[in-house]
Length: 498
Image (tube, rainbow, N blue to C red):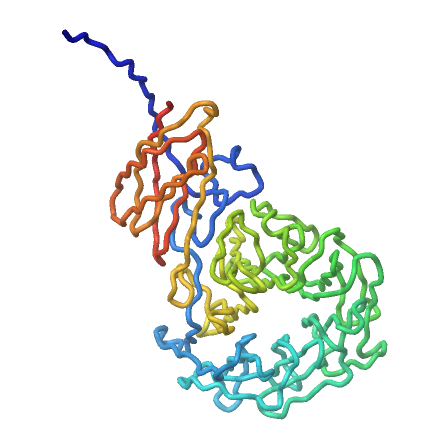
């Protein structure tokens, strides 16, 4: 005889969640258990600014455009074999015979010499300037000397030189050893490597004359607690001196007897001078406690959500540049994971290129690149941000782009959502189903109470479903791509409460 016995099956209630629209980017400042799903606790190499995860920043070969009438005409320079490329600039020179500009592309190499290539010529050859050798990567400034287009070249060790491609280079013996320089009302202003408490200036209309007098050159001393003078910038009709721990404004018009100094900003946090960049209507810089915007009067610290990843590092090797509405910083960041991404497996100066949109204040992070130098180069033909990046043991010249790859190798792209309990901390959850749109192959990793399950999702044009069937009290979902091109959007999950 058989007796019927009914099973008392527990009923599971299910709820659908729009898991993330990705638009808010990364926030490492808030504990992940309190972080909304629209943020990532860790992300890099994706572009997430329109709500989908898309192809992020990359670096490509530094092909040079050379024909304004043919935007597809480009050349790859023949760089000196075995040498690192440590700096790049454009010398804008007017040819009085042809009545046209005949600009030159200049690079500084690890043999301590400058090399040039005529930007508008088809030849890829680089020619060494044998008369110009420098102990370190120089600062280069375009100017006119005696009516001729000239570049002023300086290093802290070698002094100040000028060169015009017509006459031999000439050292300006009366100039100080310069660490930074800029033109302001036809005087050359500079900070020095020997006397770091003085702002030096040349004669009016003559950057080759540094004789000290009331009618020629001179210097202004700033001896107080704000530290050394590290960078001088001409901005919005004034001269600004960036110091270790402050900013001073100098009113410096033609008559030096009327020069005046006002101390505008004082901080306990060091300003990294190589990151200072004039960005349209503001000056941007990285300090030891985060990224700042300076409008000529007030200094504002940005809230990017990644400050604690920047602040744990000494970023003395960090560098900054402005290009096309974005502020770029090559720096060190410490990520909340145990990964070693590309350059992080060895020694490096910087491991991140950080891009900040100066209108929306959104960011992109290119992780795993060791950038030594950056220079925005714009003229009638070429318009790009050039970087000197260590790649496969050599420092190469490249262009920043939106390719999602570094020299044809796709970057690893990661979005790690916070582990959450869906406001039910004492109930176990079942992740039954996920729907998602991804146009390329990706890996989705489900992290439940420290246990991880990975599922490969193949690229399609339409939404597709996967069934992870994982359980846990806290659930996190990570999206990982090894493809250069990527577009991921509209993830939705069905969660059951056990």
